[in-house]
Image (cartoon, rainbow over the protein chains, first blue to last red):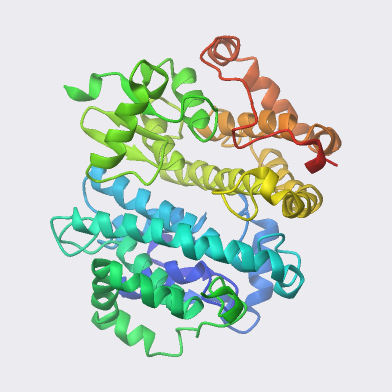
Length: 238
Length: 238
């Protein structure tokens, strides 16, 4: 059956970006996958599939599994989660994990817009003044608000993870958020970490997992860089 | 059983906002619901539930159904869809409809940020210059890109709706997008409509549905206004 074929992940080959949330889930699951655009001719394959797939994805990342094509990061995770024990078995738990993932997606969008508040079609250098303003608001108001929320979610959990005693894809994604924020806003994040010990402890716990640890140490993990969602511009840190 | 209780929708009482995507689904379904914060003492109830719910919602809208509380607009719709025939019965169809909804959510965020590109904690008047720049990019690049995508999705459908012959919650949401864009960007949208006849026809088809038509004519439909996601600032239209 086609569904037993390895997953094919399509995402920009030189950044972690939104694709990284999917990579982390696949790595933790130990699921065989091809990171298509990083292979020979892969970018062309991705662009052709973007053009021709029916129904079409709006943007990478998208996942091909047999004949099925799933796009939108949170939607891909909602598909993978139950298949690999990375989402609760009951409906209320699945809705909670997906709700968390969508809140993480909102935070990802806001983190991105700190360096691109005006247009994704312009360079950072062309919107530097506006970026400085938006980043100041992000550090002062939005970042604490999101981290307070995840801290509270962990405080209310009856286990070590966001949805209780069992790991879910939202935990992996929250690890990635912490890693990204540490890269992009080292000074602001150092201050925030003191106030959010549960979030920090969760991130450590994820990094220490066997498969995730091996992945992070491997060449499959692309390093953070200045083309991704999380970028280190000292002018935007506080 | 608690699940047969009417739905309780919690959302800001004076705007359509993100709550409107949920209202449209509930209205099309003919499902009994209470728009809690619009009733007497409702705002206090909403704020208390925001504080005390476990697990907590990050922000309105959220839906209470029996003991279940679901937040994040797209997540609420993913819950309601299969319960009311507003999502396909098969997995591939459900993933497609949710993928569309998440792309609509991205567009909603970008439409909002045309008038608040720097901070949700400042007035529009305090970020007018930046808003003008962001809105120019939205009109020139982002709006056409999103509408092209939905036009292509409809062209590839084997029926009148985004997911084929049967209405889904994504169709209702796309109607709301068209209505909001017409309010906020009447000039830019008039030009776009000529290039996106399928999107326009879908919006007309939704508005003409019996329950949706009755809802739109009722006092339950809050009028567009300058506090919502879609705002009419002539300086931001082109």
